[in-house]
Image (cartoon, rainbow over all chains, first blue to last red; front, side):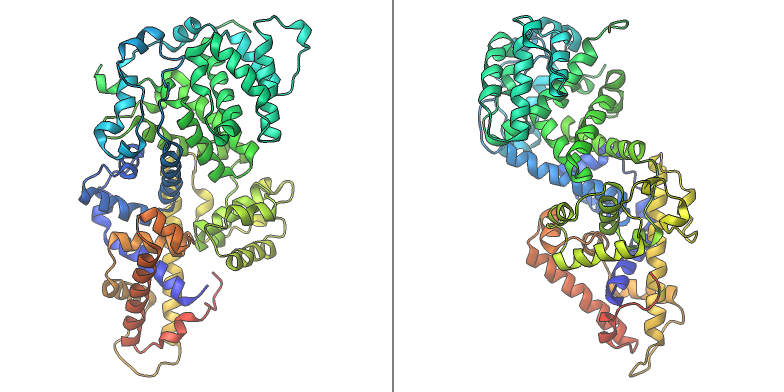
Length: 237
Length: 291
């Protein structure tokens, strides 16, 4: 390492320490970091947090990673479209009560007000997740079947009921996509079928581009895991 | 209950956009797809545990999703500790900065293929620099990446007792704060040595020159007058090893603005050392002591 590099690092740390009274008075926690990332702190406060993350590498690394996700989120939602975001967790009755909130505008998300449009709609939908999922009709058994098929534990089709079989076929279709991004036909067919039966729960997962097809396996898997977890009562298998 | 605190976390966490962001964050952290998937599952489980209690610190003032993602980044560190135990990079790796720590983790703990590492880190490091870093780690840690590396004894990891890092408890955020402080102290000590080495070198003229490295660094810091933005720029560049392009992206500047600012700071440093009779060309020499 060159002397120049060593010295530049050294004066950075020394300058941070010289500012110790401001740094020590500052309380940086996850919430402050989130506000800093969104640019919601005052100029003075943000400047102090800048000095803080300059000094502390672990915070700086988290900030770097989270900034990268922010950029990714803006890119993902650049294509404006109407998205049905209220899914199975919020009950259908609550969805009807939340008026006109179907559109998420990413370019406006820098504005505090419009950026909260979707979030406020969610806030107003008070719901019990377990009840909501039960209302929607996909049972935990069906989700378990889906998950076990994803893990390549394949049950014979003949043993599955007509209601359960599409879940296994959807999982197999998703495995095809994972192994070779592009083979979406089978997954598309069974996702479409199941979305007609359970629209509030599954319609929102319908991909609109190849990136979303490639990530569909993971998203549905996470959703299924949570669905199984919160609908399983104590004592259930 | 205050309405502002009522958040349907399940709807937010399981939205396609949020899961996508979590997955992206996990892949940045873990590189291996399988590990990243496990980490996402772990994080969702932890977030939803006990009615989303981990998110109970949320207040109005930012988007719930941003807050949740911030908590997620911390949960990924919990996952890493549980998955890999508590092996820590040698103090010399830590002293070289977060970029080196990241590379050490990918090579020695996660056992990434070299080609994958080069691809993943291509945006952060110049290829030649990255190749040299990888060679250095391989030479100094011959067991890096071999089975059982994570369970190696401290001596095999090359940890010395100088920084006291071994006794830190990394199970808490306070532990990581102490680790940062330890690393920072090590960086300062390297700078003291560098200045003492430079001051002992043959100088063309004489002028007022502090007699020890610590005093010299303090004087130098006053002269160079860094803003908090400058400190962040220098940390990202020289401690984390990020390219100007990446630093620019993070700080909302253009790469040329970043490079210009760095050039100004370097010039200030050179001028300050020149006032002490230290030849600016010496700055480009490699340090001779063991880092």
